[in-house]
Image (spheres, rainbow over the protein chains, first blue to last red):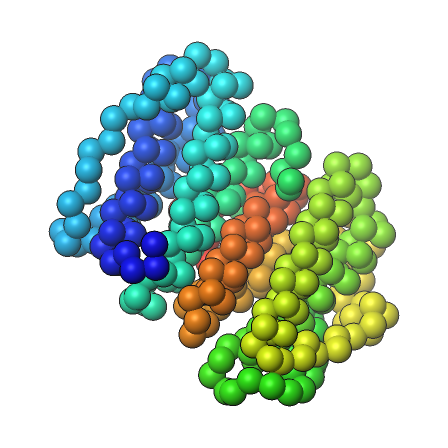
Length: 136
Length: 182
């Protein structure tokens, strides 16, 4: 893990952000998330995708994401999607916490860290909507 | 999505940030050990901030009730574990953690907290400062292990910041990039 290149790390983060975009788009289409919350989270994730893509600047070879079986199953109702989204956001925050410190270019760490912080806030927003404690 | 912040709130936040800056800045540096450039001075600064945070949350608990009190108590427990992790990191570098201050000494530097709203605004200021400090640490620490520690704590602080905003009736995240900048 320690010797992954910056491009490898960024490509992984981009794929995770694209999964979040796909999840919120699908949830909004299927009414599986509150419209206002979903629109806000989707707008943020699209900005994250754009930022990571810009950072990659054509150096990587991002892979297309396809809907996962877990997402399809979670779209049945808002409760299921909320749990799914919290897990997906948590996993993404964990990936940032692992990847950002490993980036060799120190100038990339703070801006990408600011995306991680936003992800943490998304987890809180989803928990608040689900009515579960905000801090574990 | 952008929160409405009055001039008074903004000034209050800036004042609290200054108070917190003084909490960490007055603590003595680690007394012994590792070479300059190892990151130990930065660890000492972060530890001072965490200890001030634990004391600050203790003060907040005095005026909070209900769910907000429960959430802030959970945050304080995590700040304690952060402080312990930073003490361990200092020791692993061969240093001695600075002694810190008494709770009364910290509390003399805090703003007066008369209501739950005062406490939550103070807590949000505190979390913004911590997010900013850990994002800088992720950039500045020379060793990967220290950067990983800082990033892990920063992820917790992100949750705390979002929680304090929600408890204040604000959106958890007001923008796609959250730096803790005031």
